[in-house]
Each structure stands twice: as structure tokens, then as C-alpha cells.
Image (cartoon, rainbow, N blue to C red; front, side, top):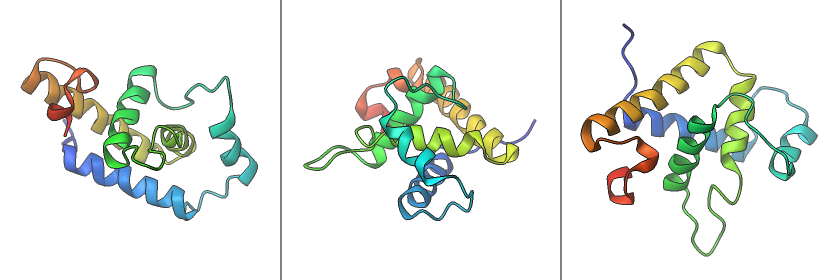
Length: 125
């Protein structure tokens, strides 16, 4: 069985993805209009994530970029961008990201007896 990434590794990957999205250094050559429209789509639904994974990514990104006097990750729809880039990404990267989310839930279930998204803020941080 392949070794699953730890929580810190998952957060590093999520952070690196956020930096890549913020700086435009993705190398994926996606049309700018597509990337810009992801945040605006009223009827958006994930292309890569399932509903639970999407919710988990929303919690994780909000932990990394919380709302303060400026918008946080959720207000900026960061989860939508991560979903978009993973949907066209390398299958190995997709698997690693999905495995990391699964690991996080397994860890939370073992430690707190519930999925990560259902944990308290103190348990999530």
C-alpha cells in the first residue's frame, strides 16, 4: 500500500497550489477567460472533487487564508481554482491530492471520531 501524505504535506501542496494560482505560474496554459469565469459561475459544481472533498478543501484553504479585513480563501473561491487545475492536472498529482484528503479524514476519524470537516476549529488547526 502506498504511503499517504501527512497533514503538513497536504497543507504544503495546498499552499503551493494557492501560490501558483495567485502568481499565474501554473504552466497549464489555460485560457484566462476560463480561469476568471470559475469564480463567477452561479451554477458552479466541482469537476474533480466530490462534494465532501470540495468541502474539505474549503475548510483547509480557509485555515491557510482566513477572512480578516480582506476576503479569505472561501470568499475568493480558491477551492474552485484548485478543483479546476486538478481537473486537468497530472493523474499522479490528482491521486496524491485525493489520497491526502482521504488521509486527513482517516486521521481525524482515528483522533477525533469524526471527519475533518466536522471537527471543531481547535481540532482542525
